[in-house]
Image 1 (tube, rainbow, N blue to C red):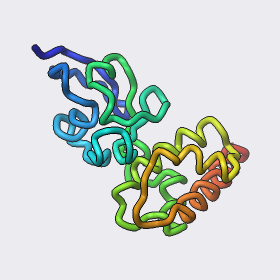
Image 2 (image 1 turned 90 degrees about the vertical axis):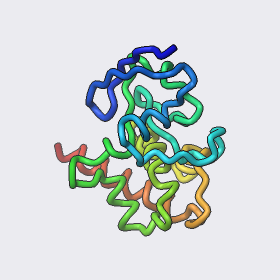
Image 3 (image 1 turned 90 degrees about the horizontal axis):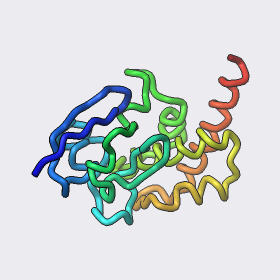
Length: 161
């Protein structure tokens, strides 16, 4: 029997009827058309499905949609300001941290959660924050560098405001 859930995704409220066994990644991709969160391993090992749930990174393949009832979800589609990339996304582009792109949404969201709580993380803290995300293309160094650049950019813009 389906249950009605209400959640906010990327700032927009949604009410959906979902089966109790549906995962958050499935409703994001198939019901809401937000395909940035990738359905990779399905068991929480790859991090491709990472979203922020009330500001904290979660593997959306392991979260039942009914568990997201009443919560705020941020997907990669909600990180940019329309056509304007977030400084973190811009740093990924400029530092060459994107190759095939499959892992990028999860990497960006985990890095964003880190930077929201720590404006000047060490390399070890960045690597720890990204440790749940697998990348088969980049070797991680350019991703770590992108997070460092974004941290500086974000801190500089906060100081000016």
